[in-house]
Length: 101
Image 1 (cartoon, rainbow, N blue to C red):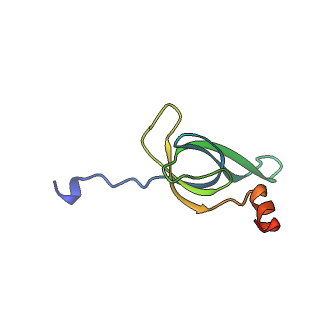
Image 2: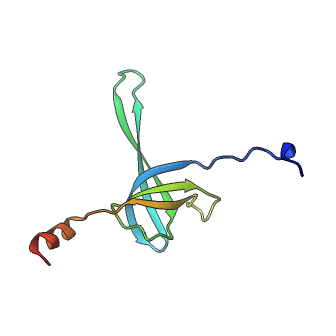
Image 3: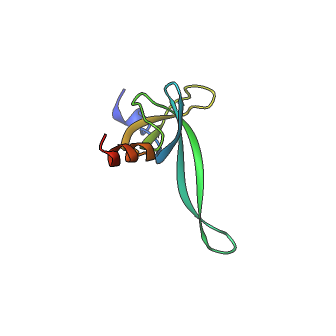
């Protein structure tokens, strides 16, 4: 096949969010926030969407991650964790560091 006959490659959709649940095996729930303007009052409102994502990287609750769209992996999973952008500092870790453990 020549280059002209191939359809253009579709860029996969990416989102950045925070892991809110990580109690399943190889699955995390990621919350993605977006800003929307109210149609009547014109105030900017935060809206949150949650996505179930396949996680091979080992993301924990509170981590900031980048997820990309992928083929359906299960009934609810259509996203995959691409990379962990930042690790979470949980309150119990802060207490341990302050105590010098």
